[in-house]
View 1: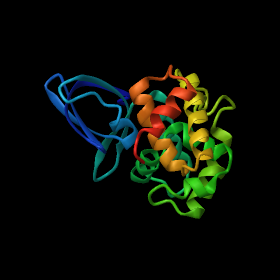
View 2 (view 1 turned 90 degrees about the horizontal axis):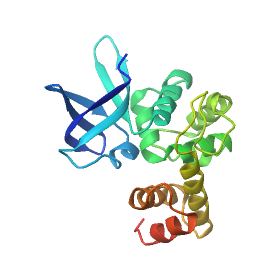
View 3 (view 1 turned 90 degrees about the vertical axis):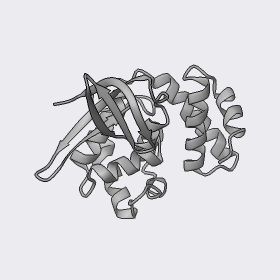
View 4 (view 1 turned 45 degrees about the vertical axis):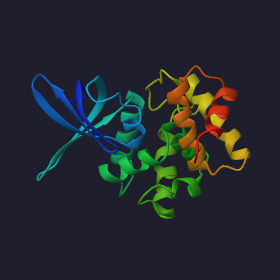
Length: 202
């Protein structure tokens, strides 16, 4: 099982990265939330991966953190009707923090905004995953895996909620807070994240 890959980033698009490792180029499919964290082409990069093997194809999926990779596994292994392509779409629309919070809060309306997800599939996400998410802070524990950025995720979630109180729709708030986090880092305060997010066009 290939659980990670590290090498030179030679190509990068919103849903795909090519990493050269020991003379071989590996195509890695990634969600937008991982693509936006990738360094410039020509830089060293490490992704946590999940290999999917089928009779007629094989694919390698990559994620910025172990927690995101594990959540991808939960989606494809536990939710009826959700395959790798749909799981990638779900994780491209919302950050892990927002996805876990939506599932814990049974926010079917927000989950239904993900590509290819209707109300019934969103309800299955809540039903089949809520018991598998850990009791820690939003974006924290997933089935025994402890997040190394739980504090940053909690701050990010507070920033998202603050923007929603100001009239932002949840997906828009989530997107601009992710961009603010990339600019300021996970140690930024809620106030700093909100201020930076307000300066970003939705």
